[in-house]
Image: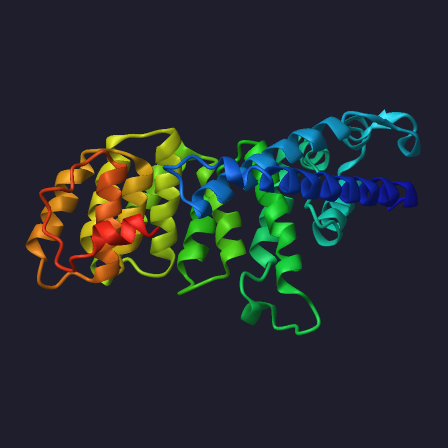
Length: 318
C-alpha cells in the first residue's frame, strides 16, 4: 500500500476521533436539558447516538474533499478508481488499524466493483474463515476484537451491495454458539437488520425452533433484532413473534423490554393478565419491568395489585 494512502487514512481517523470527542463534550453539556419524563441513562444514550450521527455526517463531508496526497482527488474519487486487489488491502488495513473503522469511501468502492461475484466471494471467505470467539482464534498475541473488524467491514460491504445471500449462513453460525461477545452480536445484528424482508421470516423460524428450549443465549439477541426491525417496519408477524417470545422465554425481561420498545399497545392486556395470574410467584424485577412497559405503552396501572407494595415509590426515586 502506498505511504500516502496510509497518511490520508491515519489523518482521517485522527480527525474523526477529534470530531467525535468534541461532539460528545458538546452534548454532555446538554444533560441539564433532560426532559423530566426521561431518565438520565436513556437521555445520555440518545445524546451519544446524536453525537455519533453528526460525527458520521462530518466524516462523509471529509471524504468528499480533495486531498493533495491523493493527487487532488477526494477519498471517494480516489478509492473508486483503484483495482480490487488494492482495495482489499486497504479495506483490511483500515479494519485493523483505524480506531474509527473503515471509511465509507472504501466500503462503497469495494461494493461498487463491476465483478460482483468476486466481491461477494471475498467477503464470504472473510466471514467464513474468521474467528467469532476468543477460543476459536486461539492466539494470545492477537487481539480478537481487532481481527473481527474485517468481518464487520465485509458485512458493511455486503449491506451496501444489498447482498443478502449470506443471511442463512451467518444466522446458522450465530445460533451455533451458546454465547458470543457483544461486539460480534452487534455486527451480526447490523447485517441481519439491513435486510428486513429476508430476515423477518428467518428470525421467526429460528425462534420457533427453540421456543421449547426457553429461548436463551443467541435467541435473546434474535428477539432484539426483530424488535429493531419492527420499530422501522412494524407488522403483525413481528408482534406475534414478540408475544410468543414473552410466553416461552425463560428470561422474560428481554421480551418485556422488547415489547415496550416495539411500542404496540396491544401488548398491555397480555402483560396485565400475566401479573394478575402470577401475583404469588412473579419475580420483583420482572414485575417492575412489566409495570414500566405497561406505562410506556400507554396502559393504566392503577387497577394492578402490587405484590411488593413499592412500585410507585421506586418510580419516584428513579
